Image 1: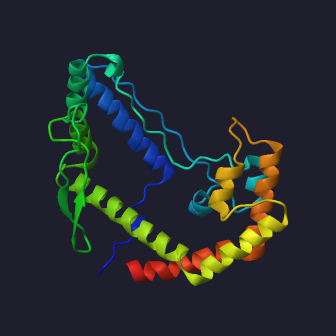
Image 2: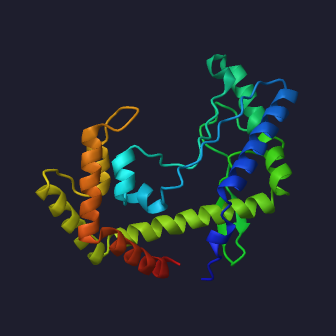
Length: 249
């Protein structure tokens, strides 16, 4: 299978913000014309110090562990828009949802997926989440072009990239080399007085439910990073993931 260069399609953080804000402002304008109040969502950029690997396995560098512990964001933006009519009647909620996405609030399932042809060949079903005629559809056309062309292909590529990424992650995590590195990390972690099956379990177990990391959380995160270094976990993960990509692609 010919796989397109998905990385070349990724927008810079600045471009993401520009597109995000234009979309939100355009949605607000469209909804206002239809008689509804839409509050644009907020854009929050991911700290530049966090690479994808850190979002996958927790902190990889002592500098991150020493200052943030396990308190770091796991997404690039906050894109949540609760309908203003959420406390209104069912009819009001449906009217708002129909204007925004073309799908009533009472719908039990999303719109049917649309087939798109990838530049490298092959078909993929894309779940758009909105229907033609809605504000979301009109804004997508305004930003990307024809809803059945530019937007569809862009979303198809992003969806396909996500599917391949998940498959590669699963294959790499199951490789003998990486499982050995995980065991080495777990032993090191336990020898230092802590217990977790893997780095993700450590994050879940030792993350402090507070606005900022506690001293204990930071100390655990630093041990976590030290054990990652000693077990060569990150280097092994990168090698295993590269091999997995060759198989899934």
